[in-house]
Picture 1 (cartoon, rainbow, N blue to C red):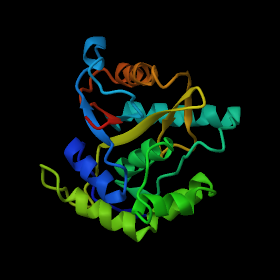
Picture 2: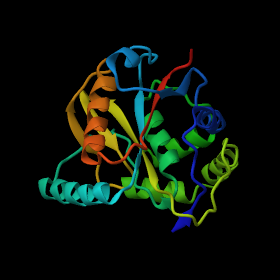
Picture 3: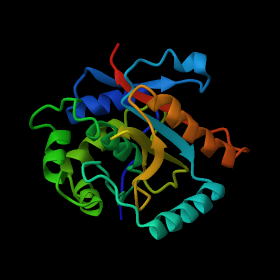
Length: 228
């Protein structure tokens, strides 16, 4: 399996990445510092996606395996136009979260001929597995990811060093809240939501993650929002 350098959970780094990928500068990533309602009121709206970074502890891995088995048994059909891809590159979860966040919001413009636009054009009609393989072999994505991963505030870890944290994205699609995680076999639907309630509803799911692993404190929230 291909291995990339991990991305830093730093809005400055991620916004530079989005720019290089060809995403409209009208949208950017911001830190969300608290889950309190008063703090959430200051998050620019409309929120297009909540991006959640969490530790891949043993507790989480056990939950993920149980959830996957339950979803397989239900044989759930997901909307064909929900853009979802599987992860086949170590440490690519940050990139995949950004892809999920951006490409499930078609009103976010992409520069013609850009890395993200070329990827979308090639991946649009593929399966989640085929989309993941396409990303793995995309030289433009690989080069752009590597250039940005080396620009964080902390030194980039060795490429073979185990990374303990994982990015996922939450989006609104067709009146439903979806958790999109390339390490899972399926998108995970978390019930009804609206563009206006996406932030609060996604925060509710994040609180469940935290409650399952109460000894952990290494959680980070970011949002894809209008540039202020």
